[in-house]
Image (cartoon, rainbow, N blue to C red):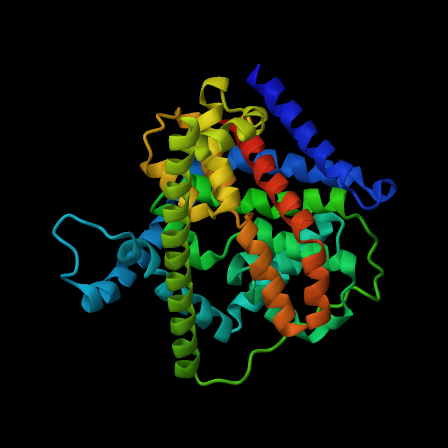
Length: 393
């Protein structure tokens, strides 16, 4: 029965994307079906095979070691601030982002990351039926982040059509930055983080191909990557250290604000209506949780976490999932974990719009005009990834 529900869920997601499609006649279902099959096979490989387990353990080990190195720096500066046995979230989860950011900067500086992004993007373009620009952007969003990726496309930003801008922004919102993957792994199981990264990459193409189908002419499919300004090695390191610190502080500030706000709203609703706001959201999202393969008995609680992610961000939802008294089954934990690994939330609309507008005001206004449609598509990507995993678990 669960396979029937999951397959029905995939059809529902495709239908919901089809409803808002800008050109239904142009939808190419062959690459969509191919990518769905690839998603299932990759999920099987990563979650149900010995080699997949070895890869995930290897990735988790790498990030574990990196976090240990990062904590050396954190301990030197902030050592003694926490009582024995305590682990403040800002110190243990957010500040290590600085070190990961530095490593990304070094790989960028040595031209290793751009080479990798171009290569993987070229391979993806042979599968997804889209252009090299779209494929590169999806990989680059995963590597450098949803706002920073547009800096690499600065040279040709003014030439990109409205349709292609939607796909580029959808990819950026559907993935997550590599710099904060380590932080996710401290809250949810690494195997689900790694699986979600891969699934979202293809899921972004699937949903964008339905919502926003178009043809790319060969003469239009030119990739001009903005070269970074010439900097010395240590100038670059200093810049990425500060960038990483900004990300950590911004995420921390958002967590303080959103968690406090959610607590206050829950208390008000509980006093007035004898039900928390999160429970109300849970009931609204319960049908979506159900088509993702989550049992009815857990769907309301799961729906509440999904809603929290949408209206706040993935960190708040992950903290709720890992620290709350929900008593979910292992399968439900896996489905929810995969769903949470993306930037699909309301605040991302402002982040992406602001990033593009800072580089090109006209394109920024275009992005703002389809902001809600962008979030709608990115949320469908997260739902689709959760459904694919539900077939495997």
